Amino acid sequence: MSEHTPAPRNKTNMWARRKARRALTQAAYQWQVNETAVLQLRREFGEKALDKADAEFFADVLTLMVNHVGDLDDQLAPLLDRTGEQLDVVERGILRLAATELNHRIDVPYSVVINEYVELTKTFGAQDAHKYVNGVLDRLAQDVRTIEVAANQGR
Image (cartoon, rainbow, N blue to C red; front, side):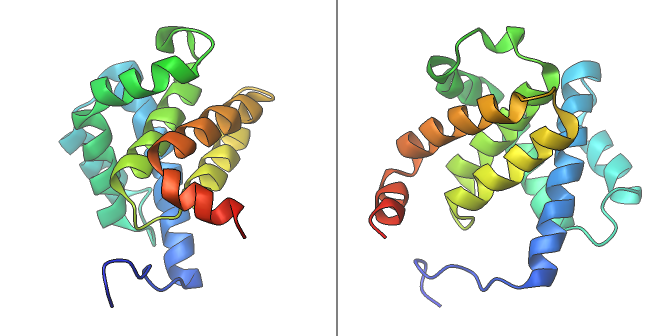
């Protein structure tokens, strides 16, 4: 398989990633509110929330988000209508996680990233927050995944 060929998609992988993203949303919240260390979060979520989830994906995205949070916030800032600190902690965490995937996990199509995190916002975020998150992520994807977005719009 060449580097441009996407990884094969199967339902097991899809559900494992979905479970990992759900756990990531909870871990990001905990990290933002309690400043819990990444290793502690990995241990804690590894013991309970990652059953049948993609634990490697969870660890990778969480670590990348924490290590690049300043850059992610700088990248998101011009797309927001308020400061990052004024965002609800759930939406801020979701935007950071999605930005992490858009920047660092090019093996995941941008439309999947947006869709998954919009759905998580519907579950964990404030009423109608998913609309805001969707708009921000659409603009971010156009900046970060320019070629992929253009190719998708050409279909």
